[in-house]
Length: 253
Image (cartoon, rainbow, N blue to C red; front, side, top):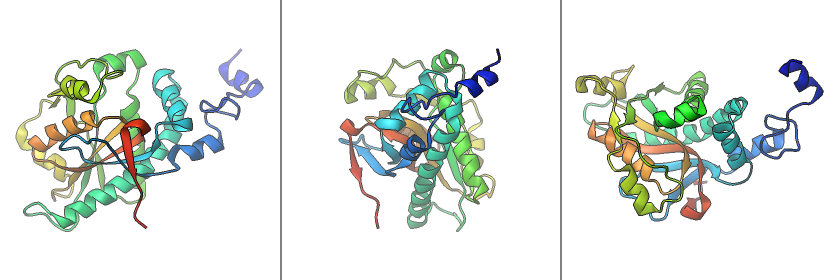
């Protein structure tokens, strides 16, 4: 009996509530990005970009993310990618505003934004069979480019070494675990400036993307690596922020 025929007889249940029809029911899909805004860890590590997130890491968003990443429910990529696109739009707008307030030398009036996901470790990619964050970031960038936003998707970062699992580590341990964990992919340094400027030739900001914000050490280390190569990294977009570690800042009205 085919899987498609079984889906007709027994439609999949919503991965977030287990009662509605899946992979994600309309009510839970609406809860993925119900409170977009800036959420920063308390305390925030020095050098952490301004972090925009869809919501706290609770409820439907937490359950959907867990099902997508750990249970291989790749059908959730579409709704999660849509939620990330909304957050990325806010982060890009904030990055462009920061760019215009403090433009780099010889910049123009129409900078291009480069979106860079935090790299998944090779071990995690093999275990999961795909790159969950990279897929969501690509979907979000494609969606916003269709709306006319000047975005380029790039993956210039890779792991220099294999860090330990971050689960259960406190902020100091996480910082030590991730210190100098990233590096730029083997690329001539002269090619990096066109990366931040492509395809307009005008230097623009970089927006980092991650799935979950806890202490901010991962994004801080990624930003440090990119800044060392000359990139301007004012903001980051994440799907969820761990509520017990973060302090929300309401959106300006």
